[in-house]
Image 1 (cartoon, rainbow, N blue to C red):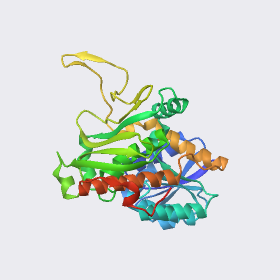
Image 2 (spheres, one colour):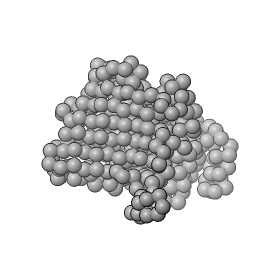
Image 3 (cartoon, rainbow, N blue to C red):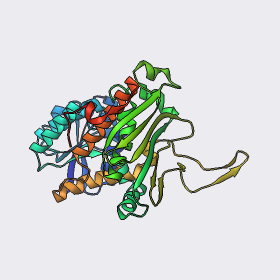
Image 4 (cartoon, rainbow, N blue to C red):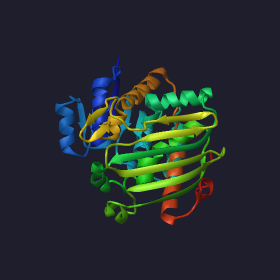
Length: 345
């Protein structure tokens, strides 16, 4: 029997999640959808044939025929919605990041411990990308030795920047929205935590981000507990396409994922020179990984096991993203534990 999933949030990414559940997850059914936008509910009804539609999240949680909740809303709503789902007896998947602030991460961690029989999962999609997961295997095998320096960046095509201005405050800013992926990857690849950061950035192209207290470009130098160095980059203004990549320099070799950011293996030679086309968006780049992570969520529910990516992993990433934001605003070095001693792992 298929698991019945209810989704809250049908925006740009939420709608892609909804389509994946409806059409690409054999063991799941998109049983309910919630949005405060009437036009989004209309699409869910007419195009996705969702049986139950809600404009209130609390009302959707009263539908006990639902097995699990998928949350794809603004970051500032994640903690409360996760907690409400667990208290209502549902397994829960939530898009990253866990929260904007540390206090809400702690609230979620405590609540998850109260419901160990319920599956709780955060959407760090890059762990499900075949290239990134293969890099993890090679590192664990010792193929290139121990990581010495990791450079990881997230860069969106510039056409998405104006859209993001409206949501950068609710999302916590560029470090929470972008860099949290790279933070989680660095922790995952090294098995160590970032302990010290220094971040710089600014609104180099869109002054609207500066007015919102955010940036359109930012970089951070990091030191891990095991001595590994890392450089984390984020940009909203990549002119040629989505440009996410990670490079791992190690004691016996290097690994590189996603650089150059080719759309495919086609090489074009014409009057403009020799080139490769690039993908437009993060979803184009990680389309299959988004499907794989929801499949894993459903499989975890069916098997009754928690995912490898834990709430603690997500909380660690938020802690570092918060430290990066603080360093950016104060223009100084931040020791992660000193910045927030409440959270110890």
